[in-house]
Length: 78
Image (cartoon, rainbow, N blue to C red; front, side, top):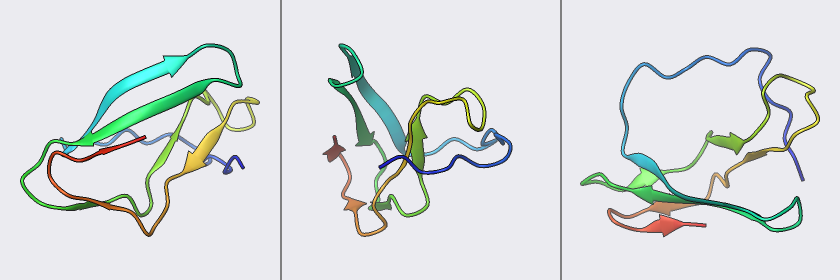
């Protein structure tokens, strides 16, 4: 289920170890994003949001990644 996006988008000013590895879109029912931990340490997905909303209430999906997922180095998440 979509998550309400923040009131304003604040771009991160730091580089990180989480990379968008692949985006697949073939209509609204067949979409996914593959993320990859390119760092040297494990990376928690707690607090991360992913989606394609241009603005709050824009009708697009924003999803909160599970707080329980931690990616080891080199491990993807789809």
